[in-house]
Image (spheres, rainbow over the protein chains, first blue to last red):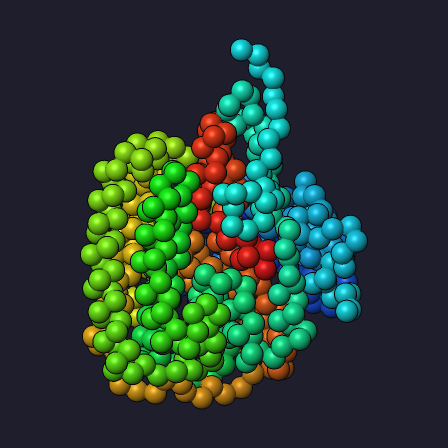
Length: 118
Length: 362
């Protein structure tokens, strides 16, 4: 399936997604993280259009471990689940998204981050 | 009556739940006014395992273990995303066999949901009847793939077993019998007061809410949202085998039941068309290279859109595998549906969502 990738910044991502997102024609799939190295992670907001062939749009930004990713929940309420998942799996702070969806305090923390070794 | 708010938990273990999930309802008298959900009881770390323990060509067998009900859809979605990063072409015969198994998965998964919805209406005899009628479909899957539940059937390049003429005949006979039973069930769900009156207007989601909360699968289609990944991709031959999108209106439990029942009929038609016209050819072709780059693939699982994201850098181990399952993405829509409902209806509403916690806590 085709991926249209659009680079954004932490400062403009909410604005760009707000402009792009029309709930009558498009839906939000998920927030994804991809570890680049021990400290950097690519954060992706993935969308697809209803009833269009092979059409996926991905907004992405590369963040450092200490960066705070803005929340898009005010625009897309369903994003809360995958925001909380990224917090647990990558140890990256996402605004208004609590830890502990999947992992307990005594679990291995941020298991999908580049800095995690098992 | 006073307006005292009480907290009532449903789960993590409850008679109406098949898997662990916890909803904490804030109720004003009998009415649910707010809901908190906890879905992380059985997280298994499969995404991490797939990038640290298994080579890319074995992952289709690992992700089949994400879910017992839509194992084929998981294997196939991963495989098609990996194939798009390799060099090769899947034969049309293998594509037909893949779709055959995916649609059989959908039939027995929808039937499991309908049986539990019946049980929640207090109609236990129908629960047992539907579970009995579901058995022949699982037997067909065993005849095709060699197993009833955890199928190691899909592989990069095609499928692992060919289909024999006798199995094709068994499929035709079983599906013909099932069609009659599903038509009877449609009559039962439409006209039996225990099911129709009990469920009309209960647990409704409007079209606007379905869009706002990104509802998926039968829940979205029951609310009138026209979306089905089978119409949004031409990588599988759905347009050739009679796929028709099923929608309804009302968005309540009754509408969700009707969507699932009519989808079963459409899946039966597609499976019959497949076995009547399986193309000649290889069941598996050789693919060259190792995954390089990133790919994203979506398929319509029984509960809605399933997505796999794969990233590789020409090495045997993937850099990243991301699984987005339909139940996980639908939790905010579930929460919205519960609000304003009577607490006594919560188990029936939950059963009508057909939630899969095994997928959710992959």
